[in-house]
Image (cartoon, rainbow, N blue to C red; front, side, top):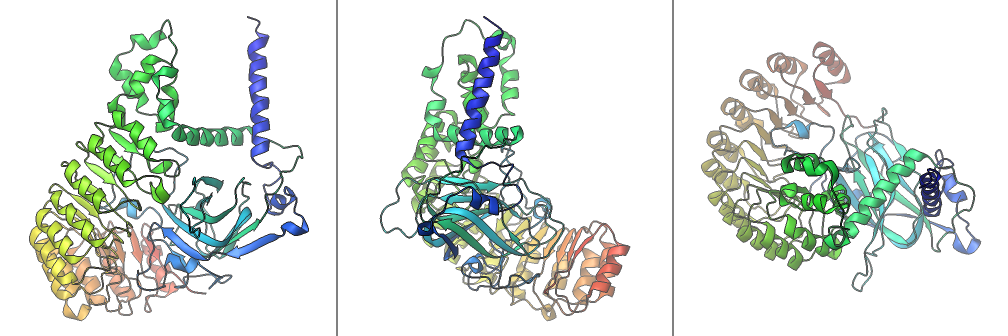
Length: 621
């Protein structure tokens, strides 16, 4: 064969890829600096004037700093016109997510990350916004008022959330994405990324967030969607193509294609007979398995098509012991789960967070999958999986007898009676019920039967009637408890704290942020410090009664403390904080925002004396 032929083939493929990229999006070299270029790549007639609109409604989100019963710091503040912009600072009228930085990843409650998570999936939170009119988007502007830089991905959906009829085929398209980058300024900005043109109108926009590089909570004020009612025509101007961009986009497109055609990908009928597998025939089976462990799921899909030997390896259930499907939430459906069943019979860790919404996964499809693949499950992540209902939790309780770790965070559409089935999972060690509608009766039953619990999150569970009764049951039954999240529990008192402190001596992490019924004058915080010497994280956020006595008790008894949040107290002085910092050598995070006795000068002095400690002091302009 002539050596020229392979070169011509490569050049032909490259030319084809260039043409395909030009058809898919405008030139990246020309749109690098300004949104004006996006407008120049569309032809807009007077009859196709641009529509500019703010979000009408927040239709979904993964977490927020605020309460379920108010507007302060909640995602719902993203609906409508700006409340704060262009002002900078910490304002209650903005949308704030629950976490920032890497502090939560360093806590005792932090779960072990899943392996095989694609490098191009780094989203930690999301919010979905509905707009009044469907348009072909030409720009999306995000008004950030404090610590910007958390938005890493913007997507558009073909479904109209206000359509009265059943949903047709639902498609998600990425308008813009970028790896997390550090923004050195904390001031407000209007974030205007250059977005890709899509071939369907939308009024449903999704922002995905990564706050790992932020110095403090990001605050978003509003989102503006620009677009036209009619489909714009792409410019025919020559495109300047960056090879690195082409490679990355092509990889993402292949990922989506592979998840779309999962049932075809593993089909052995697509494989041709080959005379030999080369040196792979000489490698031990276990060594090939070890090599393939480094591949992501789409990579396994592609490799399965190369030869029968590698198809056999790629379909081996041992490759699916840990299965993270969250990165593919936009594509995963019943067909995908059905085809994965045969290779997931040994799965132990399964992440279905964010998946299945808007009809992608049915109750029947989920049930069929667990009946085949649930017997060995130890960990099941279902955060924001809104397809779940009572039947699903019943199936989990029956098909997953070995389950130790269950995450139902922000599954706020689950009915209260569904949670009673969790009590059948006697081996649970970690249970996340943040922002769910679990009621007290079901919760007490869970606590009674799941006595091995080590990590429990009840943050923002507004349906629990009496947290003192709950705390008493925790103290009586959960002797192994190490971490407890009671963020924004509305009625716990010093009596509940006393039961917790005496019954759970192994506690290393306790979040009592925004618990207004706790008063330092009752001695509850001092009792905590004396009876829980292993505390590494203590959040007493927005409790104005925390005083110097409490800080001094922590300094004397909780020398392993690493994170302390006393935002909003009026009663703590710089002198007591200095004692704390001198005693707690491992302290790395101290939040003194809105502490009236701790001014900026005190923060600077303490930071100079203890440079290893990140002392946070928020402000309002």
